[in-house]
Image (tube, helix red, strand yellow):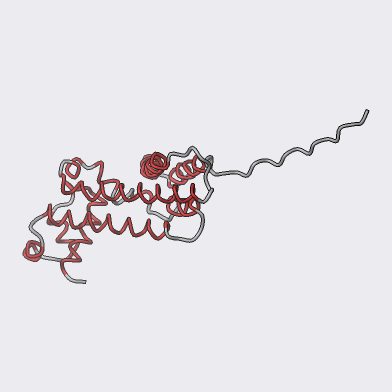
Length: 202
């Protein structure tokens, strides 16, 4: 791994653990085993390096999600595979946690990868929901865009519940609750008609 890659990966890790303010250039250099000259040779400064690291984290999250979205199965099964995939829950979402960071949110450049990531998740889940509607997997009346946004919010909110409780079980409980709500839209076959009793002849 070359120096630039080590710097990006180190910044990813530190942003996840400490946030933007807590990620100092010295801490990045120490973790990456790189000198100050090497860092500023590859990147204009901390904001530039942080942007590259955030973009990398966003790309990785989207790739992990796409693996689940592209699996065989029904639309519900693929959405469930994404929502229930293995995560380091108590560390928080590598991308979502940065949306709570004032320094990141205040910078349009640093905020952009976050916005793009969540737009991607909403779009892909909405596409799956529409696919499910077309296939008759879900009952008519679902609003795919709204449901997709709600499911993305469930996952992010589940991280908050888990971390505040110090228990990964809270994450799974919240996510499964979101899937239970989605399952309410699952199309069910009509109940068989009751057999008509033969009229008695008088």
